[in-house]
Image (cartoon, rainbow, N blue to C red; front, side, top):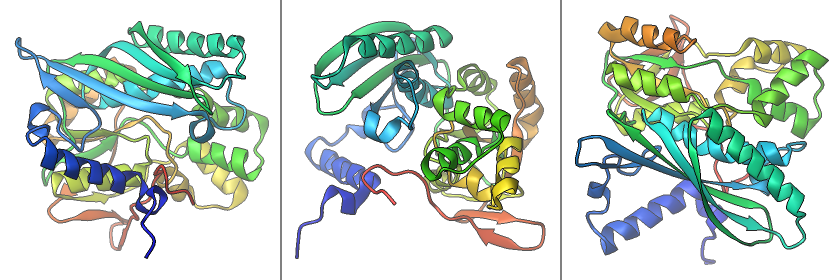
Length: 335
């Protein structure tokens, strides 16, 4: 029998193999983090009781840059990828650094454009840029590291039966944009611009994530960039609960796009990815406090369901429940 390859195992299976090895060879590593694996980021407790939260994420042009994305947008996205995970943990980003792999034939002007995008995102999120490392590679690679601080962190494992399930915004824009970019589907010009902006100019919910964590109302949270359905399943699995949705939070743009092409709008919202919203659970008695914090950030939480005893994720229309598949983006396993 042939030995399995990384593509047979997939990103998540390979990560679990790595952590199994860590547990055997360097036991106690997980206990050294206030956010042990698996979670969106890692953290250590500082002497003053605050948390130092760290996140690394890798941007590879071939897999992470959709057609038409400018280098400045690539640089920006490399920051957003890290900042979003800090936000989901309630950490305010402080600094960013990265290692870059550059093909020898790359023009320096493109590299400078990418760095301008990095710096623009750092300004938006109040982060310093600390530099990093540069080496040679076959494809453009940016491995970012973001550091932030938090007075209170929110794990993905704290959801309890009775909690409310919410998101920081609607979904479906990026999946619709990928239908345009990858399948050649059409859309009226204003709609096309809105959808493409979602993939070319993503934003992290930094202020909102920090504000919500500060209320103490949030019991668990996750960044949603791997897709809403996958995120819901991970949140349920990590907390040992069942999530029952009363609705799928579909954006108006995704609804319009789905109507044009006669495709299920709920699928666009559930099984897309690259949307940097936060999925969270809230103590029911603290909902008003959480909504007030969101309003102060110019936003509003969308309630989409509740937490129950059990396992898995399902959608109910009030009389019939149907399971939601645990699908989402996974490196090394491509459709």
